[in-house]
Length: 256
Image 1 (cartoon, rainbow, N blue to C red):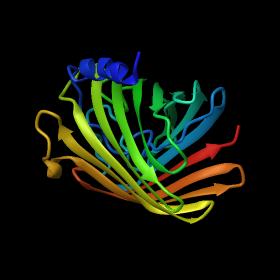
Image 2 (cartoon, one colour):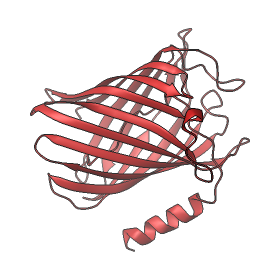
Image 3 (tube, rainbow, N blue to C red):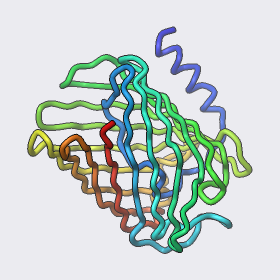
């Protein structure tokens, strides 16, 4: 079946499902680009982030405050073919401000990339489904469809994701929401790239554009290769409805 037909069967039902806006400092703060494991290869990225400064108010009764809470999420990936990759966030873990560590869920993803060269345009999609604990979300089952696009040459990389977030099951449904995430990076050396990442909620699909009532954040980022390890490190500031005013995040690519 052509991928356009697969995508149509994924998108159409998703647009009929309710959803709630994403909360700040999720398990993964990343703009998806053209990375893909070769068939049969296994990868591991560890996502780490912490809200250094914010108001500390929980988003809802029983929620874990994001202020001074570390989120630590191993992401395992397996190359299925040259175009498809399977991933698992296993587990979604947090370390609360009082030092208590908790396992709070798991998510699975399937990523597709169209054939492309080392330079020029690239595009694809990523479908994610997960179950999380009440401390992270009022709705235990959630999903996201991420559209991926970008362009790179020997020095520049530009990428954008359109994320459609929706609830699969839970007590607090709402409209499907759209996020637009972007990244612009410049390669200083073959192993070091500096850039800017931006994460922006557009709002519900049925009533978008109220940017003062949605969450936004912008990060100064560096991507580096250190031996066989990869590192994305960034410091960001939240604005709009985002109460997390200073966030740090790391993505550590562990050689396997």
